[in-house]
Image (cartoon, rainbow, N blue to C red; front, side, top):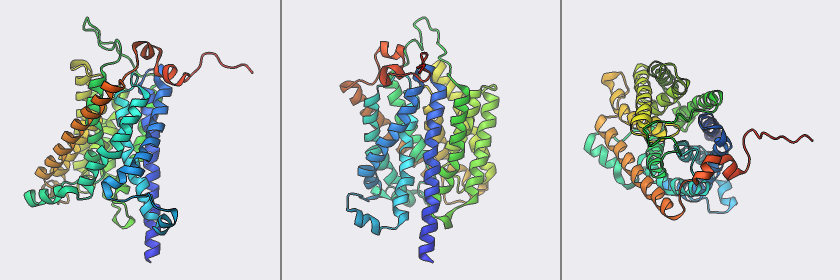
Length: 400
């Protein structure tokens, strides 16, 4: 029976890992559809190479930082481990690799290639797993201290804060230090639209993310016996709430409509295992409103050129999700309990502070040493030709 359970659990979490791995295709197509045509190839290449760099960094350093596990032993020793332990690494890696995929969307169209890869290695090798260990592996006694102080630990079932808020708040310093795309904000006060290049690809990216998110959330149980249908239903309701609110507030804009479900899913991750479905609907709806309102504000009023709106979508909606778990997870609002507002606020604020400091340090050092962005000429030509020497749709095709 033990062998059967281990096999079932390994298959369960492997399927989750594959679903979250597929989400990286969603990140790629969401960025491809949002950026201008001359930067589409770069969007696709960045997501794939960032994932590979993340794998190396997490395998060699990050997983050990978070969980104290090292794979630097002989294959004979690794073979003695059951399949579940090794597949669990794969599953958690796909979460870690989401951080640079999130950041990629914010700094799109003007970022140098190699400095961002170096940032990816540092973030996935240390910055992310450092907080991951605090939130999910009892490091430094923070959770024990919170429980003694408030009665509950910080709760983040599937990463509203650990993954999304962390990624979004690291992206904000990167976007600020890199500066806006050329000619985005003119000296006369006018704003150049820089419209998305391909709405169908943007929509495809959103749909891939939506489908994969049910692996992201449901499989965060990590073992088959702990799987909860409540997580699946809450994820669905939050997605619906985010979409409908973004539709109304975004005035039918397809960019808002297809990011609305992502906002809802970001926000519900933390409390998806403890909320009532109606609470999840409200949480998702509020997240949709946060995204539409803050994306418009940052782009048009504050003139922060966050291309895909990753700070509003992941940073702010993830922050809201962490806090919302302490509100809508309470029994008084139909939740299962075991969470409280104070603990959620403390854990969320710690993540935001860590992300901001880390983001400014990493991207500040890179800016001073290697530079962060393409030259004005390279940016005008487009990252596809400047970095990869080919465009997505070459005008001159071979005739033989």
